[in-house]
Length: 251
Image (cartoon, rainbow, N blue to C red; front, side, top):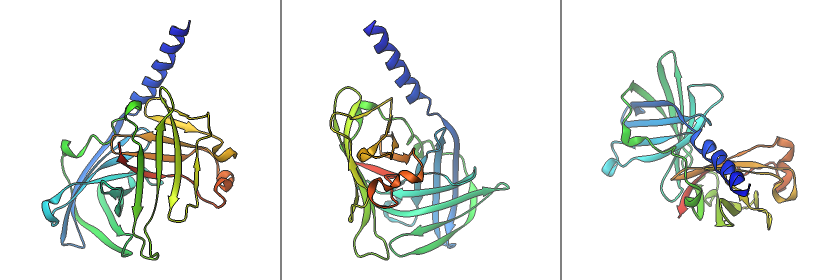
């Protein structure tokens, strides 16, 4: 009986992990303010998570930068953030496809400057810029996930992080905090770790209140979303949540 139950749970976890399939792919080239050549390519899965890469051709070595985000309000409208390997959010993209035409802009949080995307053309999807949405195996969850950015209105970097430790088969304990002010912070209850189903978990009654969130894990990042309504956001002493995109900084 125990063996049958174990197999049933394992099958459910596998189905949850493999259910996250790619449903759309996009790849475009254009220029920012008419003089900075860029290429963007990203995929979208059936959990409305988008990820890919952006390349700035005028930069040294033109190395790709990770893009992560989601559809914004309507289909074919996206908000994507770009991240370096240390979790530094270097810019944010707003993109919209309307009547077969792309338009968009790039925003720099450190300077509060916006550049307009123009001269856009659709290209074939480069395979090397995809593959960011492969579900992470439960035994490869990282020890730390972080993000930070230089805000033009503050003297210190803003951001947040999650740290994880193993708590049994497909179970992890965690601590979460936003920096530098630690407005939204908390941790899993002692003896009640998060239970992974594939690359996903849902954790309810955070900080012994009604707030709950879910997390999805991928090889380079995790994304968290609230699963309870706004009335539960008092959990952190202010109208804040643990929602965000966190880059794996420690394996």
